[in-house]
Length: 168
Image (cartoon, rainbow, N blue to C red):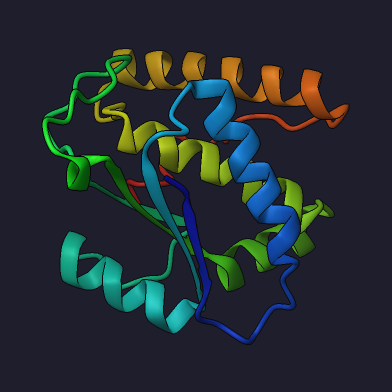
């Protein structure tokens, strides 16, 4: 099983090989290598349209996650019965939106893409942040994932600090 990484935008130059490698490392840390995962990079127009259709929020955002297992409890891996159920879902990355954030905060785009992807994977694994308690649980999981990622790679990534990445 693997990662399907699509770049459907041409606004921001993107190093897909690096992002793919980072996503594979995240999958290894979480023990989800047997599951398929889609990561789709889009521009502001596309992510705004998706955000409006599915969340009734007519604005661009950083990440939108669409889990294959919608009722998954946080911290539990799915138990698929059939081979075609070995899928976690799809993550849409608002690359143009994230690039503008990076420019404003003088941050590295590829590091932010990896951190935001970790956030999206947490959503695919049942984590939510609709309450303060859920947010703390999700932040704890993201911190663990990125601490392990940093240990493997020597990088210094941190979790999203804004509670509202899916709330925008």
